[in-house]
Length: 139
Image 1 (tube, one colour):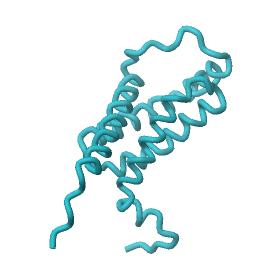
Image 2 (cartoon, rainbow, N blue to C red):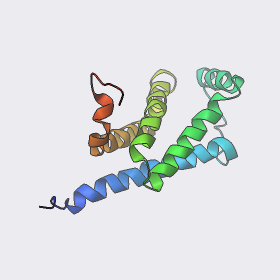
Image 3 (cartoon, rainbow, N blue to C red):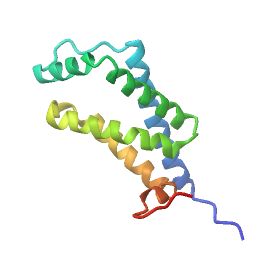
């Protein structure tokens, strides 16, 4: 007996969420390397200090951009989607925390990205079951 075919809404929702999240992180990941989006002309002092400290590491912003770019492309080409979601989870947590603590007025896009991530993680929940096992043993 073959499993029932999911309804169009059950197929279309994850597809659209995956494409929107993939495009978002592909664009922002590329921007981390190519700088085609100009930084804001006026930046609050706490945000400028935070960004300055991250730039001082000489690796952190490039690592985040590479993670965003790789994950975004994986989502767009529909390969290793659960892995891409796992890579993006700490990035999204930091986006939310950045806005909560440093620039609350611009948190809306971060919330949209967070909701897309949660929706996709729920859609791919079967792939995460073994990772969330309370006790696991090596094979």
